Image 1 (cartoon, rainbow, N blue to C red):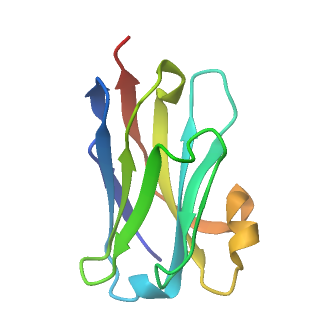
Image 2: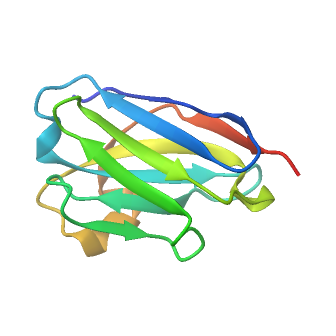
Image 3: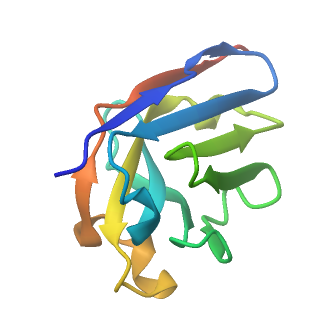
Length: 125
């Protein structure tokens, strides 16, 4: 069991950094992802990072604006969000998937075994 706790959400003008802390020392055995869900919308993939941090993937809608990273020593992943747009407003979730899953599958919510409760991002217009 892995417990994930997101933080860093709030009202953003242009940039925001989200964090997701895991309670487990085996954190570096998990691929990690960020997803988001706006009101009335389906949950959608935002970004993913491999267990080693060597590989990342992004949704086209955030590519070039968002950066996912991880610090395995701190059991934490981050999502640096720049050039925020109104359509980025959503509840952002981090999730953990077993390291056996290749990067190509990490865009699918179904491969993630553990989820945080989310942190809300609001974007000022």
